[in-house]
Amino acid sequence: TMQLFMPLNFLGFVYREIRGAMANIHNLFEVLERAPKVQDSPQAKKLSATQGRIRFEGVSFHYQPERPILRDVSFTVEPGQKVAVVGASGAGKSTLVKLLFRLYNPTQGEVFIDDQKITACTQNSVREVLGIVPQDTVLFNDSLLENIRYGDPQADDDKVRAVVKLAALDTFIASLPDGIQTQVGERGLKLSGGEKQRVAIARALLKNPQILVFDEATSSLDSQSEQAILQALKQAARAHTSLVIAHRLSTITDADCILVLDGGVLVEQGTHTALLQRNGHYARLWHVQQNT
Ligand code: ATP
Image (cartoon, rainbow, N blue to C red; front, side, top):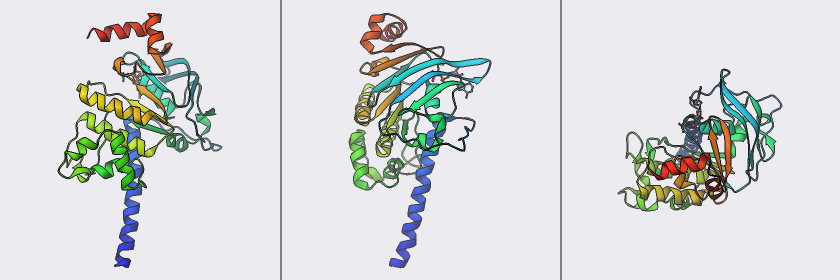
């Protein structure tokens, strides 16, 4: 039996490796759409990040030269902080995240992670320290267990169970007849938007990156799912620097810093209270959302 078992075990390993890699590719596709290839320079170094400090210094960017998207954006996120990026649709929020993932290089300025220019680092090493919880998570035709394990193909079942709890998925999973072995994806159980986002949070928790990016769903969830996600996110963010692309300002009032983008310009930054007192762009956005 040993002889039969070994190769199967090995195949299983290869299969998990490939699936793990696929999960990363899928996650990236969700952010990068039709991103052109950014080339690593021959001298590219491996980013060594231990803290998760993010710094944008005079960053400008355009997809087409005639249409500037980000203009001279500068800010710093200290390790462990929670930062929110807000602004109207098209203000450049996702573009800012794409630059952080080095899907594109800035046309001017520099992005630093732990004081290293990311343009001087290999893309792989940059993406290693970043995790993303996308708006719409791709689930594979496999069990929930394996879908969550994509975050770290080496993780054992106990580790997976621990993040399931942190991501507030345990009650949901307990309600399924096959529990964590339930088949999901196109050919299995379809999860709600909120449940899928919590699966993505569990994946991200397994990956345990220094920097966690959360792309809040545009469509409003019911308040119970919303609360579950916020709770899960709080857990996920504890040991990480987190950056939230926020659509509902009510979810980010506790952020250490809120970056307000308007037409690609960083027009304001500060805490919720400070920005309300300023009575400027953020305060206007806030009052509009309070009245809808
Ligand atoms: P939303 O809240 O609607 O997601 P956003 O603030 O995230 O908006 P971005 O997605 O960063 O905005 O887009 C900023 C601008 O850049 C938009 O006008 C958009 O049309 C443009 N844009 C985004 N991606 C591309 C691309 N790949 N090629 C050309 N233009 C793009």
